[in-house]
Image (cartoon, rainbow, N blue to C red):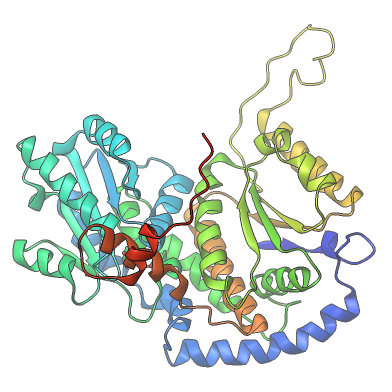
Length: 431
Ligand SMILES: O=P(O)(O)OC[C@H]1O[C@](O)(CO)[C@@H](O)[C@@H]1O
């Protein structure tokens, strides 16, 4: 990725980072890099994620999905890190040989509508759960397989599983002899996109897995003991420096529809990794140019607690805007939608700077496999670096367990005090 943090510098932005501060922070980056490198080499829990471009075997994934290569659709049944990565890759690289769908919530209306619309006999199902116990994923899978059976489709012929070495999902795969891939060892879900977790649908769609991993490897090779030499660390360090100066919200605003899911994926990565000990930027998903017409007022003139990360591919397909004699529109006629979108990107970037709001520019060469692999890898490395600088436990997410126990208790899945707390809710009802 190409990074430009000029608009985050003091003198332009408030809050902003001075060059001196960046230079001092760079000493911390050098130490953090040493720590990260050691963790990657020794495949320590979490850090092992930054070795995935080397440890993921694309051929193994392609072998596992070969029987499903003729599918018209691929359905990912998973949630959080077990869905967002796959959705991001499929959305960014496009349809390929099959349409991609995600069932990452337990909304009955959505499930009904999706199952009614899917060509079930031509649909490949990828069920993904690192723990193998996530209620939403397991419930959705039970629903999907029943729908397939009701449609006379042999779901065991159309299902691939990615999960841990044990748990109900592994047991189900073993019982029915389903092709099963392993979640990468020591890699939290939100960091596992460059593994079977994120790449199985892309393989079924015929996307270039080797290209994605090559992009990741380029990111690995670019890790260096300085924020000035490594775009990923430059981004992580800039976000950290802006957070400690008050920019506690990070608006991720891609200027490409195909990167909308990337903003979703980034939101989990940033929130679940860095939201600890009362710290952590709130990631906000936005989309350029659309949200210029809904959110920009707030970004420019609202509470000064944000920075905006603008993302765009340098290469765009063409769509000419026809010439027109309509008065006031001639400036558009003869141009191109991509040219307009890029003008909006640069104008919004300048408008944020003019209002003193810190913003950072991230560009990728194109929306292709290698550039996407690099972008995903760099975002992960930036997150790991930011976690080191903050001193938080980047690779765990203990705060999510309370709600899981409460929900399980409410459904009779065991005695959990959290479920009692639900019953004891304070009430002040206004209707
Ligand atoms: O892959 P699993 O174990 O089903 O978990 C899904 C998601 O749920 C979480 O554990 C949060 O509840 C995420 O960290 C994870 O990506």
